Image 1 (cartoon, helix red, strand yellow):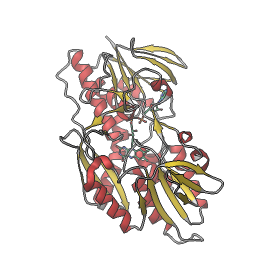
Image 2 (cartoon, protein in one colour):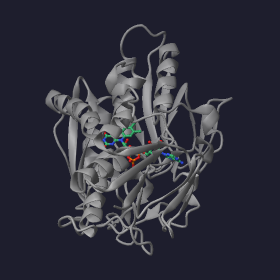
Image 3 (tube, protein in one colour):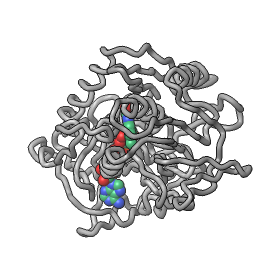
Image 4 (cartoon, protein in one colour):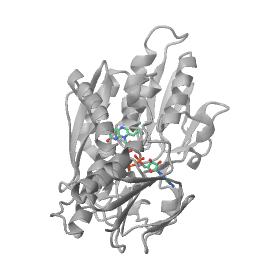
Length: 387
Ligand SMILES: Cc1cc2nc3c(=O)[nH]c(=O)nc-3n(C[C@H](O)[C@H](O)[C@H](O)COP(=O)(O)OP(=O)(O)OC[C@H]3O[C@@H](n4cnc5c(N)ncnc54)[C@H](O)[C@@H]3O)c2cc1C
């Protein structure tokens, strides 16, 4: 019997663990995570707007033991891909296969002044703080700034703008509010292509949300409540919400696995790291380059999303199982979908096929109440499926 060591118990790590246990019941599977439990980021906008209940809560990993999956609650300090081992604050762990699924670190300090100036909804804690700030907000200019790509769920800031516009238009505040988005991107959800970009821009326009693309943030000033952009442009705000700059966690940055994208380099079909046999990286932590769309020589990157992390985790489990003599392995097909809530109790779903040539294909669906119900169902089923 061998040991598969899975780093991170989020979408990717949990999917790989569950799938591998199904495929090879005798394999010892050890999952390591230093966090507080499993949350679904797709519910952060609900939490930001005051929702309570199990769907926005952090869920315990305690149920994994009953499935025969070992869970180690420990902080990973370093990773040695040569010998597939990690140092943690609870000691050293080693595996015959190593799956890195540690997600992305959020670093507001990567941009001068942003940590002091901005709220965010990219973690449970951030969304809860923003909920409190919104409760005290008297109205005024709400600015959402996207200073850097890539970031998790390319739809999320646009969804937040639409939901906040609706939320702030309800009576009871001293002043009316405006919402605007200032982004370094050329269009919303650029990997999705012009059709998706136009659909989102139309939604923003319909809700009178200002959209300002290609704006490179240089610094934020909390004292004067001003954002300073490259070229000298200044934007004032009353409430600032930022998409925090994302980067790999320190233990990943120092493991010698990063590619030119700044994320862990992997084979796009097998998710294996080049040069390290049986070391895989799935989900937000990896950087999968996609063919260029706007400029053929400038690659796009695979969107960071839970559905992608989960699909990648299952593919890696299949590859490990097949190397252990259990069945044929499929490779990752680069397909996935994401929801974008539009307000009015509706959501739309965009379906993507990111390995299409000559460029990724993504199609936006139509916003409906049924799609929002579908998202809610997906959230509940995800907890049941992975924990
Ligand atoms: C606002 C928002 C909306 C979103 N909406 C959607 C959506 O609609 N659909 C969708 O598919 N995705 C959505 N996402 C994205 C999705 O949440 C992420 O892409 C997904 O969680 C990535 O899965 P992962 O397994 O790669 O990483 P994660 O789920 O982040 O898991 C990583 C795990 O590693 C652990 N870890 C990290 N560092 C260490 C360390 N040093 N030691 C020990 N443990 C460590 C963490 O505690 C964590 O549990 C959204 C995200 C946000 C923020």
